[in-house]
Structures are given as C-alpha cells and as structure tokens.
Amino acid sequence: MSDALSATLAALADPTRRGMLARLTHGDATPTELAAPYAMSLAAISKHLKVLETAGLISRGRNSQYRPCHLEAAPLKDLSTWVGEYRRFWENNLDQLDAYLAELQTADTSTPKN
Amino acid sequence: MSDALSATLAALADPTRRGMLARLTHGDATPTELAAPYAMSLAAISKHLKVLETAGLISRGRNSQYRPCHLEAAPLKDLSTWVGEYRRFWENNLDQLDAYLAELQTADTSTPKN
DNA sequence: GTTGTTGTCAACCGAAAGGTTAAGGATGGT
DNA sequence: ACCATCCTTAACCTTTCGGTTGACAACAAC
Image (cartoon, rainbow over all chains, first blue to last red; front, side):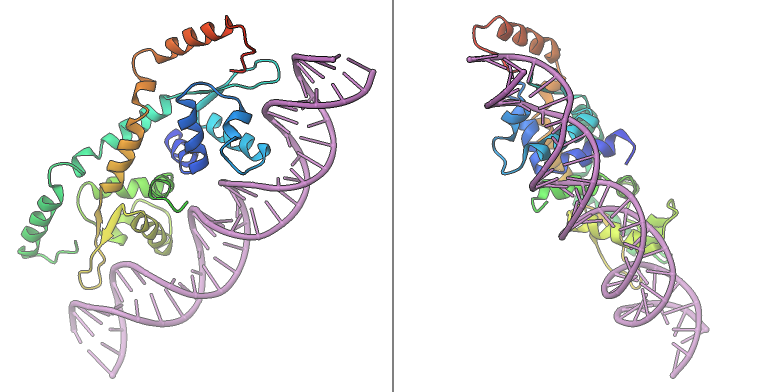
C-alpha cells in the first residue's frame, strides 16, 4: 500500500473519512467539530485524521489548544486524473462495441478464451 | 463498508486489482492471463476477482473451462462524479483564497478556532 | 497553581484483509 | 472412462483496520 494512489484510495474508502472531507469543504474545522456527527470517541476521530493526513488529504495547523484541519485537494486531483483514464469505458455505448468485437472473435478460427 | 462508493474505493485501493483493471482495458481476459504479472497463487487472484466483481467493477462470463473477465466502468463513472465535486479545491489558486479568508477571520472579534 | 478543555498516544480487542495450501467442481480431449 | 486444465472454495495464518479505554500533554482561564 506504499504508493500514493493506494493510500489515497484506502483513506477514502471509509465513509467517516469521506464525511470529514465533505465537512472541510465548508471551511477548516477542529477535530471536535469534525467529530460532532459521529457516535465515536475523539480518539477514533484522531486516528481517522492521521490517516487522512498521511494520505496528504488534509493538513493540520495549531491555534492554542485547537488543531484546525484543512482540506488538501492534490491527492484528489491525482485520483481524478487516474479515473479519467477510464472515461472512454463508460462513455458512448462502449458495451455494445465490446459485444460486437466479441462476436467477431467467436467467428474466428482459433480457440477463443475470452 | 456497505455503500457502493466505499466498496469501489476499497476494491481500487489494492495495486494488484488496479493492475487487473488496467489489463482489462486491452480486452477481456481469463484469471490465468490476469495472474501472469503477479507472483501469487491463482487462488489469491480468484479472491481479488471476487472483490472486483462484488464492487461491480468486472463481470464474468463462461467459455468452457474459462471464466473471461470483462471491465465494467459504471462504478468508475460514479467515482469520477464523486471526486469531481472537489474539483474547485484543486483549481484556480484556492489555497490563496483560503489564506485570505483565514486572515479575515483572524481579524475578527470572536475567538477563532480555525 | 489548579482546574477545565482539547487533542494525541499507547495498549488492547475483534473483525476483516490478503496471502497460503489442499481439495474439488466443471469442462474438453483422448 | 480417464486425465488434464482452469478456476473456485474451504480452512488456516498473519497483519492491518477500526474501534475502545485510560493516561497525559498543551494550553486557557480563573
């Protein structure tokens, strides 16, 4: 899981963490504020934030006792780029094209495995 | 992890599974073909394929002994839509806007926590 | 300096992830 | 009928994940 994209995807795979990111789109927030919607200890929230920070999805400042969290979108940009490579596979009736190609292959002389 | 987006992200968080999807962009392939690049038992490959299938990222047919795998891009489209909501956060110098807003808040009368 | 609030860390726990090996089901070929 | 090939399943093991509780560090307020 050492590559950045895997870390990003793993961090985003948890609904609690996605909820925190969504909250941060409205502005920076402290762990206590981020914890509000969840029936969960603050320690658990702190762990989630560490996962997000390790993935580069948030950064944290310091304001007296408070540790405000800030959304960092760079990993999301990378994710968007990655998933964009697959765009042509969900656009423009590609399934029907695939079906056509499969039919061509069935009519072939060799032993088709696909 | 019951929601579809979490299942998609968790499935994609593994580099082996992403590699399999990348291979499937070149056309359908059997488990044995998909296993080729990896130093891993076929049973492990079969498990990975089950994860991808459960997430709706592939479908599987039957051609005699072979179980050809086919890329299904719908969950990727949903993921692209989700991440697209964050687009404005990595475009157009948003960090500088945030810094400006933070400065405004520091000049405020209340006790700012963020 | 004591007290309260905020947040993190360490230790622990159960469940899930990701791999193994061994067994077996499904199909094709001889 | 038998054998080989392809693939999945079951059982198991180790590591990671997501939560808990308890201790405590940092800072503010009184």
